[in-house]
Each structure stands twice: as C-alpha cells, then as structure tokens.
Amino acid sequence: MIQVKDIKKSFHQTEVLKSISFEVKQGEVVAIIGPSGSGKSTLLRMINFLEIPDEGDVIIDNKKIHFDKKSKKHRNDAEICSLRADASMVFQNFNLFEHKTVLGNVIEGPIIVRRMAKEKAIEMGMEFLRKVGLEGKENNYPHELSGGQKQRVAIARALAMHPKVILFDEPTSALDPELVGEVLAVIKKLAEEGMTLIIVTHEMAFAKEVGDRVIFMDGGFIVESGLPKDLFDNPKSERLKQFLSRFSTVG
Image (cartoon, rainbow, N blue to C red; front, side, top):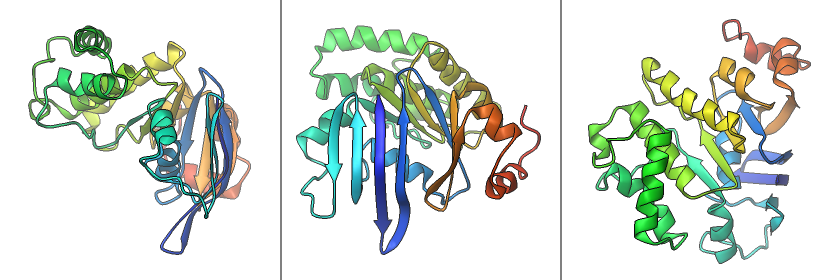
C-alpha cells in the first residue's frame, strides 16, 4: 500500500538517507527504531512530503511520485498535496493551533483540505474526540491541556483526515513519563482496529508489542528489518546488538 524506493536525501552535502527502500502493507504497523541522527524522522517526513527527496519514488495506494535532482516537484505541487492528505502526521511536539479550540484543531483539515461541510466536520470531529478519550474537552484551548491530552488531540486531528496511513514521529518523546501510557494506549487501539501505522519510536517494549514489523536504521541506512521477536530476541548485526544493549530488558 505504501512503497518507498531508493530514497536519497542530503542536507548541506551531508547524506542523511542513503537509498532507502521498504514497503508497508495495508493494515500493517511498522515501527522504526534507531539512534538519534540515523534518519528516522527525515524518512517519515519524506513520506508526508514535508521534506522532498533528492531521488527516489514514493507510492501511496498506487499513486506514485518520482523524484530526481532535475525534478521540478515542489511542496505546492497539487499531486504532492493530494498524497500528503493520505498520510497524516502526528508530531512529537503536537503542532496544534494555539488560537483554535480542540475541536477547531480537529476539523480544520477536513474543512480546508477535504472540502467537508462544517456541520459534518463537527459531527465527525466529536466522534474522533470521543475515540481518543477527550469528550468534554472540545471547547478547551491547547494551553489548557496536558501534554498527553494535546497529543491525543493531534491523533484525533490525524484521524479526521481519513488517511491511508498515520505517521507518528516519536509521539511520546515530549511527554512526562506518567503521560506516555495514555498516548500509547490510543495508538495500540488504532493498531488493533487495523489502521496502517508507521511509528518512529524510542519505546522498545511498545515497538515489540504493537509492531507487525520493525525497521532498525543507523547512519542513513536500513540495517535490519523483520518481525519484532526476531529483531529484539535475535539481532543479527553487531550495530543492532549494541543499540539494544542500551535499553533494559525488552518485554
């Protein structure tokens, strides 16, 4: 359903992604792990076109965009905007509109991008707020919420776009430890309901429990990819062994 083929990206002569290729099937949950600076978040931003690849192909639901160094593609390209709507992003720092209510944040995309009638968007927005456990918070503003609540608003906002896939960029890294569980519970529920998810995370136990597949990145490469049990219990590369040794036992 999602294919990334030979994606390359450099920033100021530094190669950040080095010919990355992988596929994600519909309903699959793929967790991407690896050290800071390995290219995980950049890769996620490529799938959402917040960053434009230097080279390679991005295919979402059989819609393909090819990039090369001579390409004229840019962020305002209508084709990219269309595909971006199919790949909703949940950021580590929430990225909510501070001047809009919780409900206002959730319905902004469907109204502006999907051209949905406001009344229908409100009805749908309330449904998704209930889904993430925020019923009764629709008239609050982001500054009145905890970090965990803000991230759940961000998830509801992503769901409201009816995307083909939701991309999570370290969704718990900005949260206090006691708030991590409430966000992971919502993501786990989405996984159980068959939503296609790609999750960049430092939560190893969560990646092992929820992921159908785990990708380990380092230095701009995919070093290993496979079933969670295989990667965590029997890592093949020395680099993955070293990485996992930094964490306590992964249950």
